[in-house]
Amino acid sequence: MILPSFTDDYRAAVFGAAGGIGAAMVRALSFDPRCAVVYAGARHAVGPDSTKVRAFRFDLEDEASIGAAAETCSADGLLHLVVVATGLLHAPNLQPEKTWRSLDAGALHRTFAVNAIGPALIGKHTLPLLSKSDKSVFAALSARVGSISDNRLGGWHAYRASKAALNMLIRNLAIELGRVNRSAACVALHPGTVDTALSAPFRVGTRADKLFTPDVAAGHLLSVIDSLTPERSGRLFAWDGAEIVF
Image (cartoon, rainbow, N blue to C red):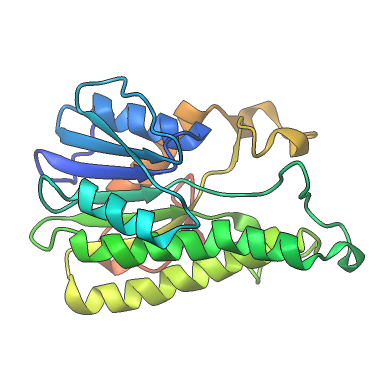
């Protein structure tokens, strides 16, 4: 996939490259002949599939590792694209709540740490590294269920609230970024329902044409990123480019 809106030899970094969507984003970017290098970050370094992919390690819950990762990603110069493709919906001892009776402090802390705090800290360390002379984008994966105005079913308290918090953080970061970098955009992206481990237990009833493979989802999201301008910063966009109201 080619992203024509970015400068020649643009540099990209993907945090969460071991996940389904993150790995697909790395693959797609590595196939773009205009992309000079793709930094691929995960808790355990991912082996590169291309000579232009450079793996690095980071821990979403360890700010020092995030800061070190940002230094690694800027070793060759300023960045043009940073993608945060991380997220937590369920784990062996953590499931989306169907009722307030299931609320648990530990689950709330863990979900917020991964879905909101971690991406915010990645922004803290990478936003200053975005190019100011060419188009640059910071994009974090969010979710439609993080929209307060679109919430009609309730439930999934920790996930909904953590994604809503991420959306607010993205808006805040975008406002501040706009004051210091007029070439940059900072956005949240909703990938739709993707055939990954995150969505696996919750795909019953999803139409076949609305269940995307990771590679298809990555293509959708990169198309949205390619269409962005600084004027569209601070918003949440779905995979098809439609804006989702917070």
